[in-house]
Length: 135
Image (cartoon, rainbow, N blue to C red):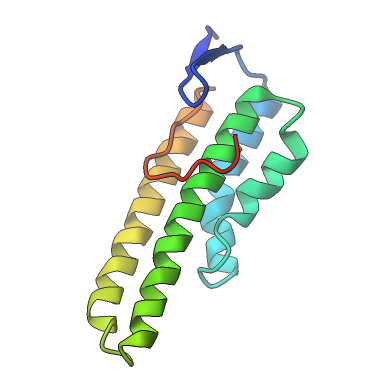
């Protein structure tokens, strides 16, 4: 495989091995799995664990897991703010909260599937709407 640009850092990343590709896929797909297992509250846990274990082993896995983590932190913040609006409005906020949560879920699935498809090709996916905490 040829060099793929790492858009998060602007430097090229070398071709990835099979193990790195697998860990990149796990970083992308662990977020929806973490979300389902935690009832929507911890979608960032899976990518964080991949980042912690592989941050020093592979630049490609580090970039993929950091991107997935940052993206999910952004969505979690929006979801928590939506919950706060529901509580502050004594339940009236469900009128806008339910459509917001549906959109967040669809965007999350779309982004993670797209990230997994890129990872299967050995490429790093640059997530939209991310607050860059990890790099």
